[in-house]
Length: 353
Image 1 (cartoon, helix red, strand yellow):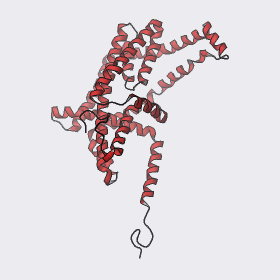
Image 2: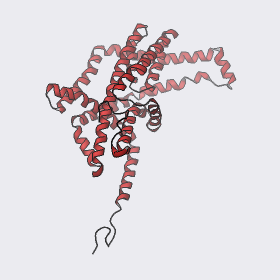
Image 3: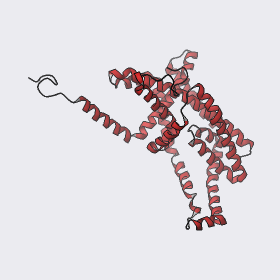
Image 4: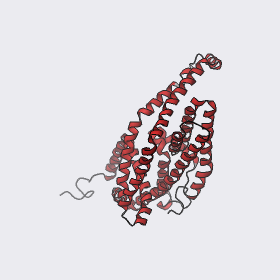
């Protein structure tokens, strides 16, 4: 007779080996589906934001959580649709103006470089390098960016609906994910998911304040200095500020190029306004908020931004900060003594476990 595994007869399956093979296959599939995984992570961020907004609505209106999520969804869609309905024509006109101004500015820069004596002198010193072609890749990238808007829109729709479904019943998906982990690790995995959700919710609240503040003050500053398309540039500055460091630089470049068609002084005005708003937000407002909520060391965020950009491209730039938070929480949860987070960590929101 064939005995039990390991007792006479043929040995049973090598479970650790099978687990390693399955883990390797899962890792390979995840790497091949990187964009899908990142969009799924973005949907999780949407779900966390919607759940955070739905909780007070559910308590105040005495309605189920799912109904509160639907209320949040309607408010979110309405907050976008209403301004577009009333001011959409003017906003699109300003965005069209920016889209036309930037290529014209680049063409003027090209002509200036070609005609200026210092430009010809530098070309001669550097062995005939053609500086007039320096701006050509920028124009090409702007065209590629415009062509990618359709893809971005489709991604945004998937992320929104995925986030809504996750937000309606988050416990179901958390329990399902925990169920795939070993029994001995389930409590720790659940703790990791709860801590990650709390930290990401606090980070999202901080970034929302940053986006709104940058958008409002950038618009007011640009309008005060007479820069054309101030509202559109202010909206772009606010949205781009969601991405630390890189977003601010992109907003300043776009603002300066768009304003340069009015004259060099207006480009300087745009740089000063956008730079000043970013300086105040980065050195005063955000540190104050983070000191009371959560904080990521700047060096950690810079290296994470570089690493995730190399690994995942544009989506890596956008998601570098929240991915860094999740990685830090994972390290503190699974590798700190006893498996519990250190009491002095800098990622946990104030008062969180």
